[in-house]
Length: 86
Image 1 (tube, rainbow, N blue to C red):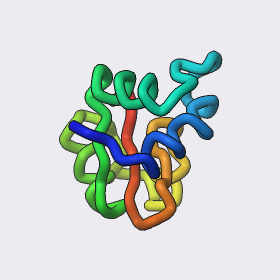
Image 2 (tube, rainbow, N blue to C red):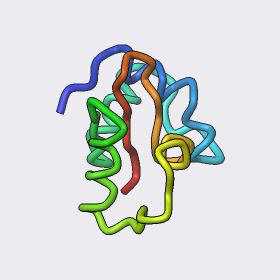
Image 3 (cartoon, rainbow, N blue to C red):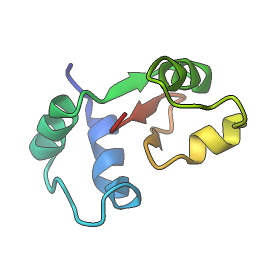
Image 4 (tube, rainbow, N blue to C red):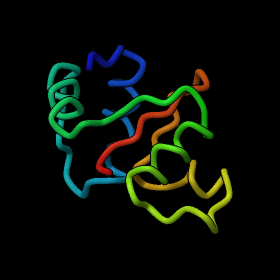
């Protein structure tokens, strides 16, 4: 999967919420890391919730806001979300 610049920029900026040390420092490194870790881009928070549920994460008691705040979920800012590490 090819990740656009908006996605890799958000991941580079916010990767510290998920990893204690940076895992990527350039756009190319972010692209490779996201591909290797089967990250996905969702078009809505509902799509994120479906993906997490299908991946086995128990989100039945979580609100949309709690899902958005999850360490694995990155808000791109254009209505899309990046989900990493599930």
